[in-house]
Image 1 (cartoon, rainbow, N blue to C red):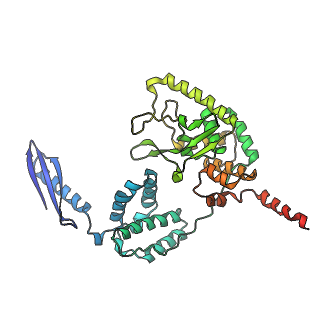
Image 2 (image 1 turned 60 degrees about the vertical axis):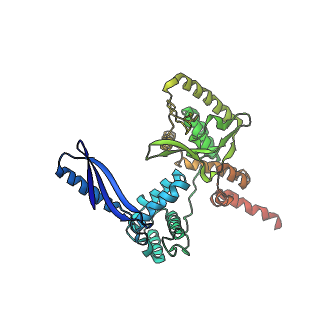
Image 3 (image 1 turned 180 degrees about the vertical axis):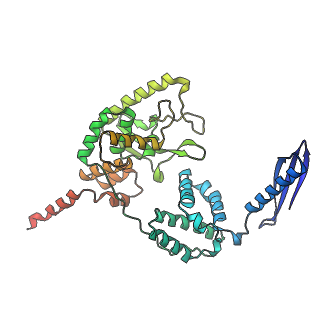
Length: 380
């Protein structure tokens, strides 16, 4: 039911009564509007009333999957998880079809079979990210069960779908040598970024998150504790913790650090020359974040820009077509070939555990497998 107060001067306050919540508290929504006539006012009252009833809360025992997901994001994801996690969940829910499939179903009516059937159909159609979808559903229903919205968790006992074995492509030692040769003709910033990936094994966001204070020229290392991210909703860059929230110190050859130092000096001279035209970004204390690998005007470099520049360099020099991320695999591959301990490789790459490193890289060099047979030759 709707009513209104005349505030004078053509303004009106509309009231829409929505009953009472679970605690017996009266629910009412209001809106102040301007109206030229009674007919115009009646239309605005009707439109607002329809909007309120379309958006009103459902009884907890009849809540739909879509409505619960909105509360799950508001009460769990936003307060406790990173913006990166929220964006990943929204991508799975909206772009990958989870909401489209389960959205209108009542949460309490979704049974184990519905989830098993959904995952099986996704696999049959070769849809991507099936294990990620399973883990997201598991998280949603676990929270619904914890909050007493449902009496049992339909994801309990469902096995996680197997992840496809990731194909790891990379540059071998000779290809890396060729890459570093052609990089001598490239723009300094691009050369530095590519070497940070190929030598340091850094991710794109980690490279762009390097600040001046991250670099230690005395011991030839860079402290990797942040990654640059972009919030597509607010259209702003921000620094987030590194993946797995495990900062690490990565050591580099002195030759590379000398090259970085030279770039750094040129960077500081350019910033000084720009003066007030320098477009840096600022932290919550309104202090400039001293990012190093930025655009000419000091504004952060977008992750997609880095990828696009790498694609141009590959094409210009007819390099083997691997992704920017696979430069990181190239770093790991060379270390495996040189016999570096896998624990060291894990820590350099920032993997959560050594199992990930072993799974990805223990089989990279076929020649090493062949050579392993030679160990037993003296027995014959």
